[in-house]
Image 1 (tube, chains in turn yellow, purple):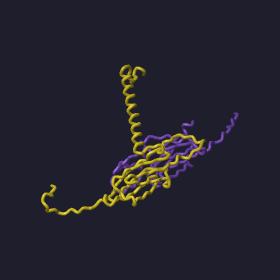
Image 2 (spheres, chains in turn brown, blue):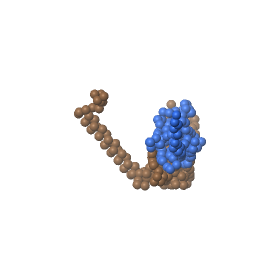
Image 3 (cartoon, chains in turn cyan, purple):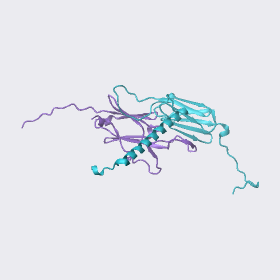
Image 4 (cartoon, one colour):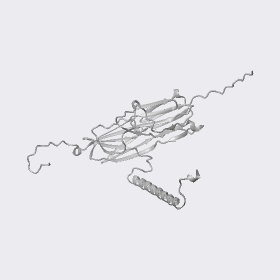
Length: 165
Length: 134
């Protein structure tokens, strides 16, 4: 089998090694930059161990935010709205274990989390509701009066210069 | 062998046949924690959006399968402004070791986390086998 070894030898091998090393460096630089950027916008500080995934949707009158926070009890979630920035903080307890417990897999994110979400439109801070169910936090915020959808009646126009087709 | 105690994640290709073929939905692999306690193995799986009604958990032969269907909480008229995940369901399966007592497996859901307890079967006491002389 040694004759069929697909690994290149000699100068080709060293240049591939060099390229691989270079790519590793890029990834590392990107990671460090990304973490710095997250830290700068307040998503990642010493106190936030993880950042939950979020969806932001918009209906005619409301902005809806869905946040995946499995394992977090509703009373451990803190939602604040300051201006147009919605901030959600909380803590997800780790699976209960003692010194005799032997871990085999630990893939779930636990500990403190935080998430800051800029809202797409001006909202009415007095009409906010938050509701957690099955590990999904739903936040509904009414839009400010001026950013709600309004129906505009289209009149059959006779005025010149308005024809679109 | 300690290794055999660990439920091993299986490939995602073995999806439950009940999945409707009409709308292709994404399948996610939920993150899990598995640990050994005095009573047996405990498995925690993060399944946000899955309720007790939409979760199927089954043991067949020595395979434990979980399939959690996610129902979108979003009203149909709402438009996505910023979406970080496409809607999908959760699937994962594990091979159980022989010493798990299948009859006593229990599970509960709370705040979108599934907790499965897999108690160990009591090992039969060693039995001396008498040897008959001819």
